[in-house]
Amino acid sequence: RYIVSVLDNELDDSVKTKIVDEIEKSEKLSGKQVAFAKIGISRPRLLVIENVDEDTLKNDASIIYVEPDYKVKSLDAETPWNLQAIGLDYSEMENLGGGVKIAILDTGANNNKIIPGYDFVNEDYDTSDDNSHGTYISQILKSPDSGLPLTDAEIYAVKVLDGLGEGYASDVIEGINWAIDNNIDIILMSFGGEHDSLFLKETI
Image (cartoon, rainbow, N blue to C red; front, side, top):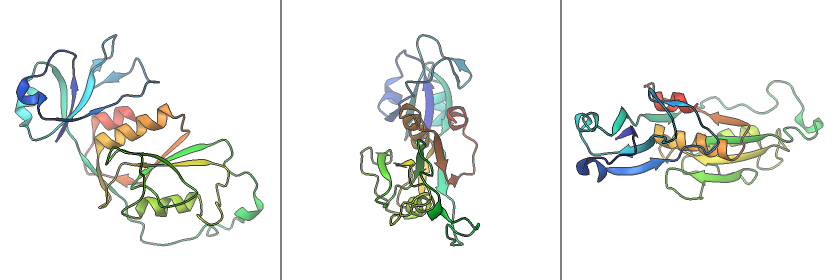
């Protein structure tokens, strides 16, 4: 599975049939450099292609740059801790987080204080958590019982990792672009990977 940056001209038929997704760029970003090519009037498209040989992609004249659609994985949270661990009494703080919008890019969230954003794993609006990692992260920001500590912040669940806590760089990129288009102030990503994705780095 690969992410490719493509010019507007036609892909070879053998490649075109292998497209599984198109990464929607943020409408608010322009004039950026993507994969060594300046974006002009005609912006390159980012496509996700699978079940095709890498050499076939590299030999297609329409493709500017190719890299594997690297996997990322949620980071373990093995040591439980509570919100008072650093000695703050959040109950005495009013309007904490007011006016701030946060997107949690993770496995989703089963937390009634978290606003559903979008599920880029299944391409729908159901951001329920089938892993629990995203829910754990969301509870650090907002308890489902009290909403503490960030009582007044708008916090959104954006699902980019699956039930195994794994996901593709392409879905993370789409999650970041969703956050930009929805005026998110802070993007929280509690996952890592073993590879350095140029496309993901440029999006960040």
